[in-house]
Amino acid sequence: MSKTYRSTRSSSKDTKSFEETIIQGLASDGGLFIPSEIPQVSEETLKQWSQLSFQQLALEIMKLYISSKEIPEADLKVLIERSYSTFRSQDVTPLAKDVTGKDEHLHVLELFHGPTYAFKDVALQFVGNLFEFFLQRANKDLPEEQRKRITVVGATSGDTGSAAIYGMRGKKDVSVFILYPTGRISPIQEEQMTTVPDKNVQTLSVKGTFDNCQDIVKAIFGDVEFNKKHNVGAVNSINWARILAQMTYYFYAYFQATNGSQSKVKFVVPSGNFGDILAGYYAKKMGLPVERLVIATNENDILDRFLKTGVYERSDDVAATLSPAMDILISSNFERLLWYLARDVLASNDDQKAGEILNQWFTQLKTEGKFEVDPAVVKHALIDFDSERVSNAETTSTIKETYANSQNPQHYILDPHTAVGVCATKRQMAKDNDKSIQYISLSTAHPAKFAEAVNEALSTFEGYSFEKDVLPDELKVLSTLEKKLKFVEKPDVELVKSAIEEELTKMGL
Ligand SMILES: Cc1ncc(COP(=O)(O)O)c(C=O)c1O
Ligand SMILES: N[C@@H](CCOP(=O)(O)O)C(=O)O
Image 1 (cartoon, rainbow, N blue to C red):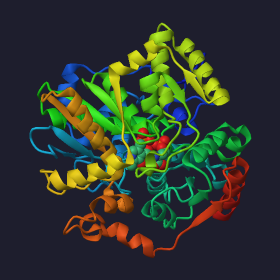
Image 2: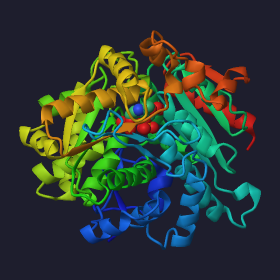
Image 3: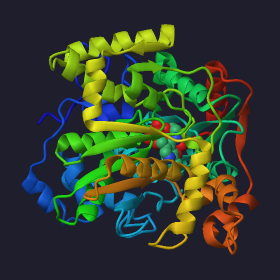
Image 4: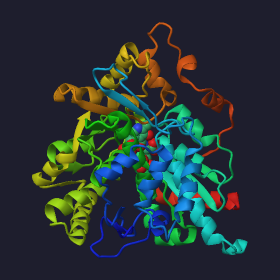
């Protein structure tokens, strides 16, 4: 097993080490890094893994992707333990079983027990510690002026930003710049990011959309001179470490839901940038016997349209929905899946040829705003995936119905992203009409982060109170803290680069 990485757009045999992959973030040809091989896990190993704690399981999985010559096992173990010591649940990602009653087998995988109350913490606590580990090792015994430093530049539609900030705040030799679309994230999400006082953190509120912010970040990665000068690091899910760290909860939840039985399992994942569900795809390809991964989108539905038509097309306008973290026009990580589809269906398993095909597709996407794949490619995708598109009205009614009818516990409160997933799960149940399937619906954020959507659904219920039932004390204080943010008047790479350089000088790190 090589434990090296290649770019999705490369037509050469070149590979990179894990450390290079993580520090570089995005490949220099604009592609995303993927493992040279996907490690395979036997049934026997799965049986042994089913007995492990979350942290032990994370170690076993990560060992398959990281050479011990790069990170010795003892160090990796410490990194993992440190990363999950900040979580409020002992299970890290607990599974709320049979939420809608014993008959339906609808389990909600709660991924929001980390420091910023969103699923991003599972990966970004680890990524922060990983950056620190690599930098400490590189800088050991070096005088101050020769130390290697990383300038993290990330884009957020609300959750990645605060999770990255909490993962990197105060870390030596790391400075963090987070771009977010002005007025398009929830007030609490904005407060979580802008009230962190650490000197190495700066938020940039950009007048535009999340896609504008993501495009700027990618352009900055492609700017050789800026990159050389500032050593730019990625915290978005273009960074392979994000995907790797998210695989653990697919295995862990599968074991909890099946409890040693041979049940069929479907995962339903509220999706935007396709990073979360992609981790499930890798788990499935490693050998976890998952029946299907269901992509749940809101009205920004590029992924659902692709699976129905084979056309990957950027629509003109992003819809502002009740699940704003998924208001994304282009899903970065879909490129990784497309590489596997191209390789399997069109390139006779030839990695280099798959790189060429991806290059053609993404050049076409850039010039024409879309590309279309052979129906055989979609057919192949449908072996592993299905998709559902959920409207705003359905999101609200799902929050309502779940609150009114949940049995375990009663009055279960969903955040709007999770509600998109639960609505999609219910549709799948109706279509499948198969009581033997276990449905694991991923809960990607705590409802406290989306007061407006939750209150719109629940304020008419007698006895319901957002302050009392939803809002944790830790988040209550945020509105009283001083905010630190810088406005960028238009979504322009040069303006963002100047803002970063100006703030880096002020940070004096
Ligand atoms: C709360 C929430 N749910 C779902 C998603 C979608 O996840 P992904 O972008 O990995 O598809 C996001 C953002 O990424 C999010 O913040
Ligand atoms: N929904 C995300 C968007 C960024 O996606 P990422 O997973 O690629 O970091 C967010 O909340 O910021």
